[in-house]
Image (cartoon, rainbow, N blue to C red; front, side, top):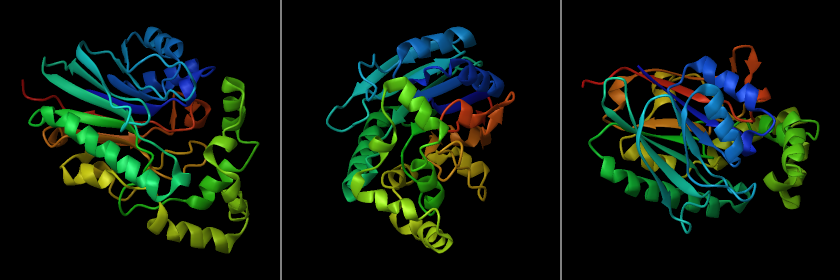
Length: 305
């Protein structure tokens, strides 16, 4: 068995190392893709606590340097950070090849796609360009088992977004994630996620009719560009393959409203998929106490050596 975990650890994970480590350890994951690994010291401490190897896409110099990383209890054979500053707006695509228990290689790609939802159509264009470039990079692995995981900041085709729940979370200054963000970098998330022109949306969560209309209409406006390219290329959405009807929302962790964190298996790896779920709580630690995202888990049977 090879167990995979995709985990956005929220702005570097400072002050939440123990809870992050507890959740990761409880899943018994062999390979963990980390997004928002902006603090190398936190990533190194996690690796030390878990007894794992660590690879990072780079050393962040600012809280918006959205670097990614990978932890592995399995031997790491090779790694490469693909730098495309004009296309991959959240820094780099990390490629790491590990050796599974049977000796076979498995390559994992870790990514964090752009958000910038306030840009509307432009943010969709950016994400689609990012995914196309990622597919170009991964093409050299065609014919071999590999996977792509991370925070895609997009909703899968045909899936909804509980917009009223998300807005309630974003506009609530008492949310714990705002306090954590303020403590970590000295400013609140509200000013980053929203713009003054859209704060009129604060009225929606408190109105039952507006909430129902907004949630239903999410099929029309929810950000989803880019993911369709992965499906078309034959990559398998691990969670949805195992759970065809369960929402599996991953964000925000305290009030899940949408599924934006994914593990995609290549056509060569997908037949080995056995389990997949969203980790809501582990070893007594609620997911929202460790990060504003819930991690996604996938388990694969051993390949034929």
